Length: 268
Image 1: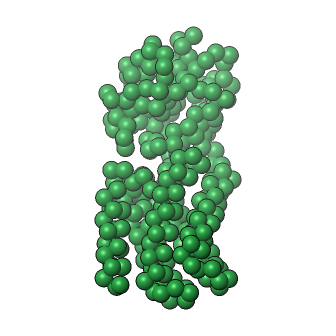
Image 2: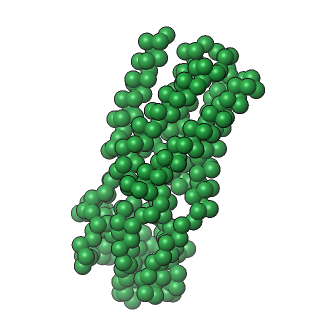
Image 3: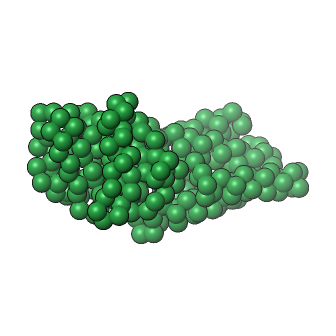
C-alpha cells in the first residue's frame, strides 16, 4: 500500500510539473479590468498594448482579433505605438463601458482606444498590474487612468474559491466514507487553513513578482497542500484505513485544483 501511495504521489507531481510554466491552467488567473467614463456617443474599441512582443499565449504578428469588422481589426493589427508597445491580441468592442482581460494580461501595458466614426485614437500612460485582479478607471476625455483596487470584488472572489473548495472536498470525503461529525469538521478546518494560506501566498507572489513566478510556484504550492493534507488526514481521519485517507487527500485536491481553473476564468 505504501509503495502504491508513493507511486500515485510521484505521478501527481510529474503531472503538475508538466503543466508549468507553459500552461499552468490550474488555479485562478490574474485579470485586468477597466471601466471607461465620459464615453462619447459613438461605438469604440479598446485593447491593452504590451511592453513585450509576446506574453503567455499572446504574441505580436500572430495576434488575431475577436473583432468581426475587418477594417477595425486591421487598424489594431497595423497600429504602431510610438513608445514601442505591441498589439498582441484581445481587442474588443466596448459594451457597458467595461473591458476585461482575464487570461494572461500583460504586466506592463498602455490602454489603446479607437473611435472609428471620428477616427480618434486615445492612448494612456504606461500602467502596471498592481494586484491579482487589477481594476482601473479610464477617462475617455483625456486618457487619464486611476487605479481602483476593488477590495470587495477581490475578497468576494477569494471567498468563493475557498467555499467551493471546502464544499467539494467535503462532498468527496463523504463519498470516501468520512461521514462522522468529527471527520467533517477536520476536513472543513483543514481546508480553510490550507486554502487561505495558499491564496494568500499566491496573491503575494503575483503582486510582488508577477505572473511568471506565480506560474512556477502554483504547482509547487499545490503539491505542498496535498502533502500537508495527506499527513493531517492520515493521522486524524480514523473511519478508514491510512491508505484510503491519503488517497482521498490526493483525489480531492486534484478535483479542486481543476475547479480552480474554472473559477478563475468565469469568476475571476
